[in-house]
Image (cartoon, rainbow, N blue to C red; front, side, top):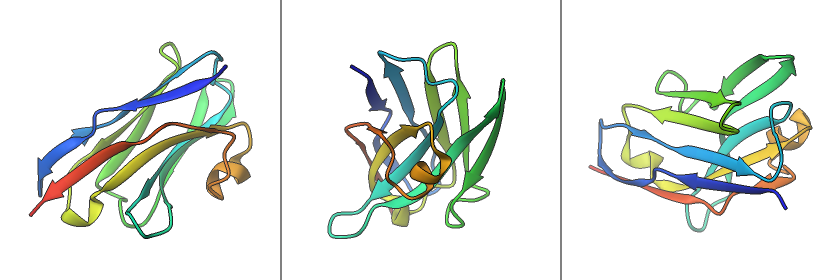
Length: 126
């Protein structure tokens, strides 16, 4: 059984940084797209960032406009993990962050990935 486990959430002041982690177990995900979404209670889940597998060890990263220039996503295939580095955090970034993975880029982009983590809470205080 494949599991995605997020960690690294917490409380940070505005302008601060956090690095989340998503580690997969049970299957190698080197040829999967892996992404991050976030959800504020009462609102729809929204795309944050993802790494798209192109071929071999080539990946492409893309970001939501709201985090572009502040967040950087990276992955470590040896650890079967993906990491968003979140800088210059704003109160509007407060949400539960979810890791997602799928072989299909379309599925990840649409928020319909096969695999999801349980979520980790990020709270940014003003």
